[in-house]
Length: 289
Image 1 (cartoon, rainbow, N blue to C red):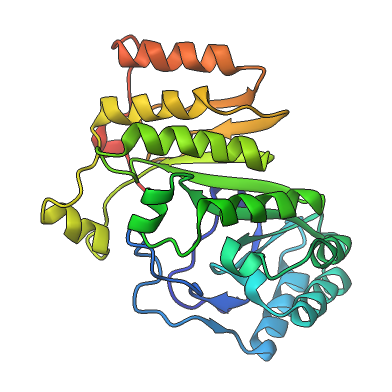
Image 2: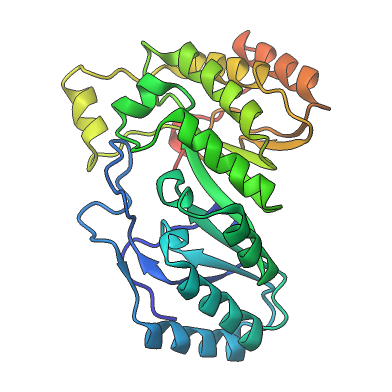
């Protein structure tokens, strides 16, 4: 397989065939993200993609999932996506799930009919980086979209019948907007009604503008108690029909995997116990991105 740049994938795609279709991110301006710094977004040569598909057809027959990397494959024109998904179906007929990252700015250029067409060709799961539902926070981190646009795109994905996995970031609002960020993010999730939410805890990376802001005293990361309070406020404000909530990413202090609304009371009780010191939290040296 031909991989370029700093390739990333969601934790749940660990066992997937990673087919890199694009390099980088179309936005690449979020102040907290250092993944694609200095990398210009580009679509890979179709001959290279074809060669990788041939490799997967020969050597990856035990893997039944495909993840389309990098940061924003859904930004490709519809005909290009249709051709790509068609090739995957033809050359890897045993594949049961195809997934990709998407951002709301480009995703909103697709219609429900567009997404339904992609679904009919095998697309199953869309990963959306919400980060926050708090408007001042989204503006501060230069996310490039509003909370309303994020919600609208999430609803579009769900209307098309696709599995929507949303990522949120504890701490991204800083100490000043900590609880407001958590509350508004919970409300945004409630409005989107995703299938899954993955919670991460912000870790400041030296190659990011947010790291420099923190160094200048312009941004203060909440402490462990603050992060737990955010998690409590987030869960408290989520009202969904059916949702898988996970905080088992390596960056988090308190790993949780639950179903909402079924486990909501139990989860809130666990967070309260952690806040009172009754549960052991992950030590700093074991936290990672």
